[in-house]
Image (cartoon, rainbow, N blue to C red):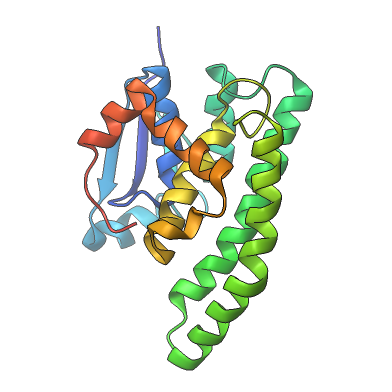
Length: 204
């Protein structure tokens, strides 16, 4: 009998969307509970470390989005064909996390002067460095981030690149055709395209 999954997050894609893509791709039924803002203080007390997302698996609670993604990927054949590919997935997901932390600081900066300074550094240094490295990885790997088949790492990239375009504009990935192609490849998968078409519309 399949486990009962309940994914708990805010009404956003954010740190939970790659988990939703794993569920969609694998055809796994789950409850997608989105905590209303006014109920967050109540739910925060119930979380292991005061943050979302969390996943309930037959009533057992686990947190940390990448740990959840990794677990589900291993359960459903999306963690690479062997331990080496699984390790490469972890390396890329963690490195992408480093970039997302920098982007988060930019997005949440309230001082307009400091925000502009952050943007200049991002566009001139940080983004070309990271996306240039990722572009080469995907280009050298025939359009996948790891191995020769879809992994959960591809889902993390697709969601992150979608958000990147929302922040900096659709043209922002034009100089990274392999990454843009990876995003489009993921979202063209039938089961994921079906999720994409029906998912709630949110800012991020």
